[in-house]
Length: 618
Image 1: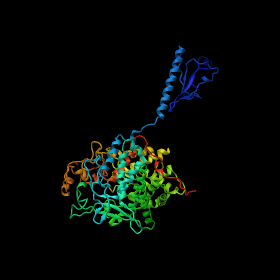
Image 2: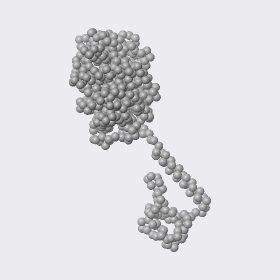
Image 3: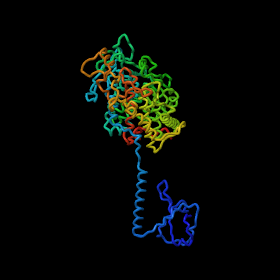
Image 4: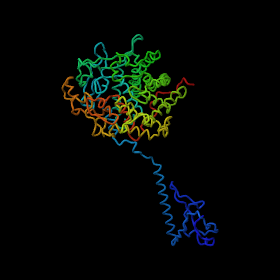
């Protein structure tokens, strides 16, 4: 009904068209009942033959515009132009609506290509043994050339990496480092190649895997013990002889002339063995195109795993730090809390490296037991002491992209639920606190928060990429409302950005990145001038206590990080703030490459190259 007060006889004089107002969707709605319409009276349409249009209504919202057309040609041209413009505006709106949108909040504005290069370069500064002449680090040389030949030990343990700011070589965190770096290459090798860092990272991995082949000596006979070298160098506290070990002596590794004792374990040190297995297996996938070397790595991993698994079955497996001669000194630095997670971790990687379902059987059968053994302090944390969350992500990957069905549904389903819960724990502030500046505090009583934030960043971005490949928009959790891909991306990049300078101090905690970064890193080689002179332990002490900047920039080193309130002290004699480590930097490299670039860059099926359908399942 219209609001016009015309009578039926007046209908012969007027002809009206009704059009609704424009909806929120941008469409011009037709009027069926003439309700909420606008009466456009142009006096150009055929006259109505009925008078119903002129019935008055108290509800009408129409208006009589009394428009008169004097030139129909111009009017038709006006209608044509108006319709064309309206159509173009509508089409443009639809195009803009469906175009993919970049959320700049979820992308790092920082130069992650440079960051990846620098973070890898840190490992060049940590190399022990015959130092490469083409290394980008110019304040390092050959060192530790007698490692393994001390006291009653006669072994070739030249090579590997110095652990941190000291000159000790710990096998356990070194193996974890190689596993994690290898995993990042297996997933994102295309990204590494795109930025010209693939050969660089593979060189670092090979340096580590070559050394791991040396630390495992298989028995020639069943009566002989398996030998695992867990440590080179002393972490003792001999105050009577201050120059007798790697902790009391502040000296460049090139100048070391003191005894470097070797710690020896056997096959009962199952956590150490499991991590070595994982590292050799993952590295074998990285070097799969070098068939001979890859097989050498795999063969060693299988042999060690076979020996260690037998010890677990007869309940003689222990953590390596419970054996004084094996890991007594390492207890101060890398005190392992269990071995089940390493054996499950190692079995999972060995399955991917060989396709042998025996290893997957062990991993899936013992996954729940490993989960039950996880300490409260380690819940939801991936680092050198806890591999459970990472194993869950790997088994979830298997379920997503190469589901094997029976008899693995239960274990793979458990791992998938655990990974979803892990993601929710990262995003919910009820699980983990954050500093005022946004850094997640996964182990608040432990210190050194950056290493844990880095691996959380890596796992969350990796899982986001898995879900993206599946075409999912997010995941569900039992204790929260779930999460979206955008939430995972935002969390992951926020931790990377914090490390690289988006924090209250505006400081990059990776040395050499940006204009403001730690300059007094707790590191022997970086703090002593590379001047061609021999510097004794006594001389080194003045560099330890010096208030000057380090004379050498330890490029790419991620320091331990701030306190709970974003506070940080750039002092060399405060390692809880300023000391880097290879295990921490491995997590950083993984997080950086995962977040690099707008493209997914994930190799979905490469990890399954050796995996065939299980012939045992009918």
